[in-house]
Image (cartoon, rainbow, N blue to C red; front, top):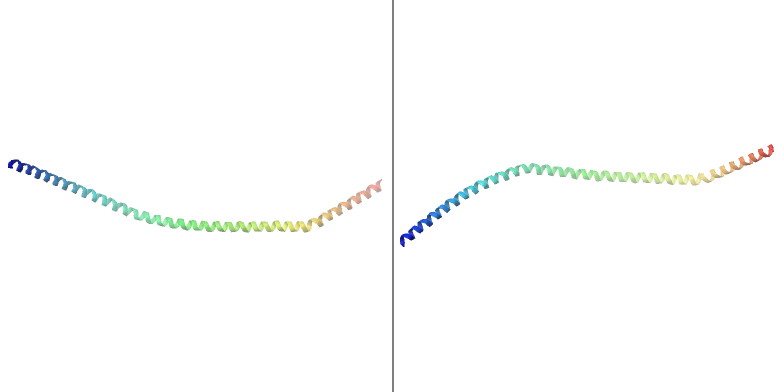
Length: 128
């Protein structure tokens, strides 16, 4: 029985040795894979930094452009308000001129029409 126990111990130790060698091989492969992953991450980081810098510059320019657009829109609104005020002033001036001139002109036209009617009546009486 002692021999069987010694044989079993040898088999167990051999299995444990094989298992340890397998774990070492797996660890070496894992180390290589992690090194490759580390290199790839460094490459991505190296390429991402300029892209992120460009993105920052682009967003800053977009911010400036939108601020300029807002200023231009405000200028256009002010211009439109000014044009509207000028148009309103012209309409008011037209109304005032019409109010002041229309009645005397209509009276003059009425008077001239009456004079022409009188002259026409006088001429028609003379012919008759």
